[in-house]
Length: 388
Image (cartoon, rainbow, N blue to C red; front, top):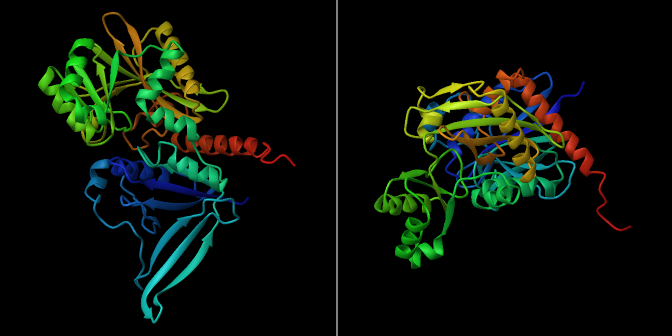
């Protein structure tokens, strides 16, 4: 049986670059070599693509963060480097690799070009320029099957402010919030701070609208902290989300898997050591605890799972997503926080843990995701692209 050639794309031009390397390390070690020929493709932080002869092998973000500034272009003993260019149109071979060596001619450095065909792409790129529909758009142009949500769902889910509008229109409960845009913040800072203080109740959470892994998130207890928190979030995005904190909140997560008829995992609860589930708690602090399944009543579990499926469908996700919730302990009311269309796949990430606890192991999970992508692509090939 012919092995599927799977291009695992990782890295990226966002502040979640190291998290992506850690996720890719886990995926690359768990794809069955008997079924798949894996082609590791790294996107540098400057946007360059390269074939990785030595893909990430460490399974923790701590180990990988130490290598964050090291060159990722693979090279061999003769000094050649292999740069990758993805073809943005349907072709038998989707990627071109450029091998250049140090031998100079009167025309410049000598280069060799070869082509490589992929059967499917497995994107493991978190954050902007990868999880937000941009990479998915390139893969659509190339007409290559890929794991995960399409262009629209990826873009909507990444933009937390837009996603909340869709959630509200479908009666999915979210916390009270306001959006701060860069233009108004730069010209009317005091007015913005006054408006937030009048309309929302402290404490507040401030976050970039288009980012994940809890990067750029701060908690503000008063107006000076609010101003500082917005300044921090503004470093990562032109749009900032300011939300009321859920009192005494429990952080709950559900994993979703499927296309038209998605399945849900058992719910999990995150017990961070810090005040909230920030970047350090997610990737650097091994004291963060997870309870799977979360201690909920059967009715609460059913409610949460139904909300997760609805949120998944509202943003038009497919393949996979992790849906995050907050639960106010006093009122036991659920609030939908966000939908993550390329959830973390590191050794401590919840998506795989939730499915493991639900009876689906990591290698089997990867198989399911690849098959779902192939099924969706096959259906799309039946659509007409011309009138003749």
